[in-house]
Image (tube, rainbow, N blue to C red; front, side):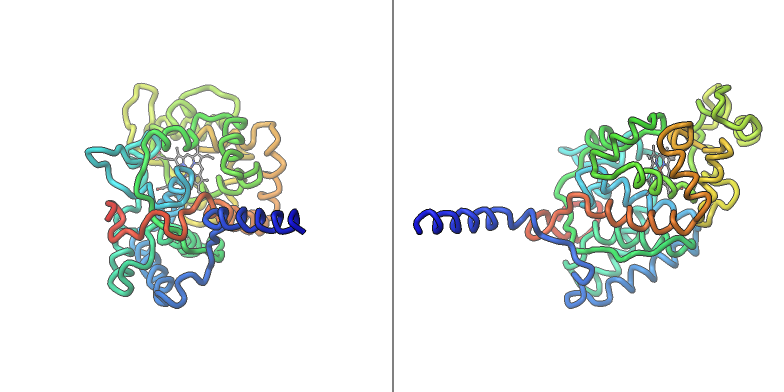
Length: 321
Ligand code: HEM
């Protein structure tokens, strides 16, 4: 009897001590506290994408760069302070990551309706979903209830975000450290069916004589864009998908098969390795790509959220309260 009581007590203690780590996100999180939140975000994102199509790409990327550093906690939105180097000036984000003004604008609208309720991290997650839908991509149910971080980290951003020079095995281990498998990696990379990259990100690739790049594709980027080997033109922009640059479709994968991946980390997904078959599958059937992308975005959105009483709900997204 005594040992049974002791066992029950131990189980009770274990489950109590685990309460914070079991806090769950939920799609109905704001239903009672801010019922207008989701429609306000949708309206603002649809307006922003109508003003500039590329913004859809920028917002999807913003969610990715938030989630891969400290989890999906809005850390990417924080400005540097005298005591903290934030993520905005990290290697992958400086002069590149966009959409901050759109998120601040949405946050201001939502704050005026329900002050102190909706986190910046959730706004980024919902904005990514609405941005995808606005350019013909898939939609999905966003789980909510993330809270905002009190810190950000340039060092972690430098360490955790994958680089355009990464090999397939480096990308695979980067994603697997976030509990995302190779199928998730290929599906999520399909976000490069929209948006643009700077010459800085593909100079070496288009100025090499590598066998994994179509020679005419390389020439036109090198000379017409131009993105020459001499280091000039760093900020010149090329679409990831020259075929349908603003439509969320599967032509990114067709481009990879044609050796027209813009950055190195795109082309390594179709280079005789273990992900070729996934790329081929997405070329054959775009509906599989679209549903895998949606599922992988949900999985990515689950990365280490702050919940319960962790973190805070920021009043504005670029500084802590
Ligand atoms: C697999 C590893 C990845 C690498 C190495 C990578 C790298 C890059 C690079 C270098 C750029 C261009 C930046 C510039 O030149 O300014 C870019 C843009 C972009 N990335 Fe990725 N990316 C990866 C995965 C992802 C994922 C998982 C997503 C979203 C789910 C994503 C979404 C985007 C989008 C939409 C753009 C265009 C943004 C715009 O036009 O503003 N990327 N990425």
